[in-house]
Image (tube, rainbow, N blue to C red; front, side, top):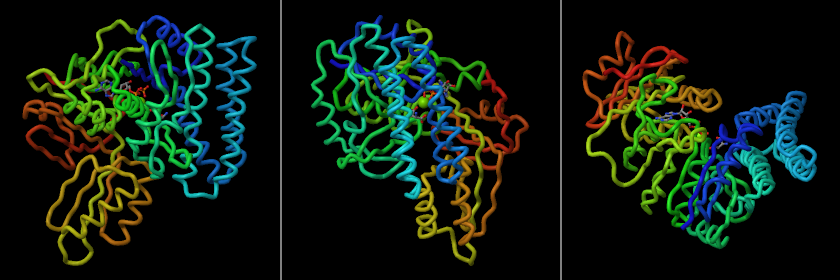
Length: 430
Ligand code: ADP
Ligand code: ASP
Ligand code: MG
């Protein structure tokens, strides 16, 4: 049975990290193996900034950014291959030429389409370099273009998978025996061959797609943390690693914003009872976290912080209620803007929404809502979500903070605090 490995940006951020990945793959006997890689380091952010420069028509900024990206990737190739770099350099340089050509060609098109034709180049570059490196060190691997395997609709920037077509394509590879298949996360393509993307941080989801289609034995996502914790270990000094949790609990954590796993990753795995293992890239032998159908009986409290949040409060302009037609209108606009409300609270003539304060997405939505509703907006807020809360935990975490909105049901409590304390660290109360 096939195993799927996924390596995120941090685990292939430079030549040393790629060497480490090579040693890791050479050392594990797991075969056949599908390896899904993200873009190197923060390349996707850099590609988004390049896209913005192209769309602004700021040619000087565009050229500087393109040159920096080209320089960084070619420097990694040089550091890895030394005097044997020429063939890989040639392939990477050709990808940069194609990227530049696409920007010239698509800068007048709608942004989501332009985005999908260019942002996936981070994964195309990283997978080209990693594949060449694996072959260099004797781990024979075959590079495959995920745009021809993960078949989607044309909902650009959040494409939906056509499971039947994708299963047919992926199974058509005939992966067996000692095969190592190397491919890209995050990207797909329409049946007509137009590039699409699955949403930011979507490489975890790509790994799940391959695993689901291949009835894989397990998916391992290699991270810069030892596993899944009951809170982000970088923010909560006393977070504890979860040895085993259920798909359902992990889905809740991801859905509420735990950045460690893309929320769409778990459902395709749960359907086929394929375990998801979260392991340390730096310490491969450290005990991992396992997400599977069975978990511990007792519910463990877990904590999710979302910073840089905005609260948008809407009231009808006339004397009407915040009724279904209005809710339908407002949530329709949210969906169109690709925004998810982390907390929703409503009253007879009020709707409060807590949203990511992502200027490119939120500002146009707020402007459009302000035309039809009376609107107030509060910025620099922090949303804390607690799974399996107790009153004592909630009051200790809230302390003297000002609460702007809150919500609580049997399993989850949320509090929206005034202030964004980034990069403050938090303590889980004992
Ligand atoms: P990738 O390189 O695979 O994209 P990510 O950066 O998306 O990795 O995910 C790893 C990061 O997720 C960690 O560095 C950690 O700070 C953060 N994180 C957030 N919540 C959690 C959690 N509950 N458990 C572990 N890590 C978490
Ligand atoms: N490279 C993409 C991103 O940064 C996908 C991923 O890393 O999962 O969003
Ligand atoms: Mg990620």
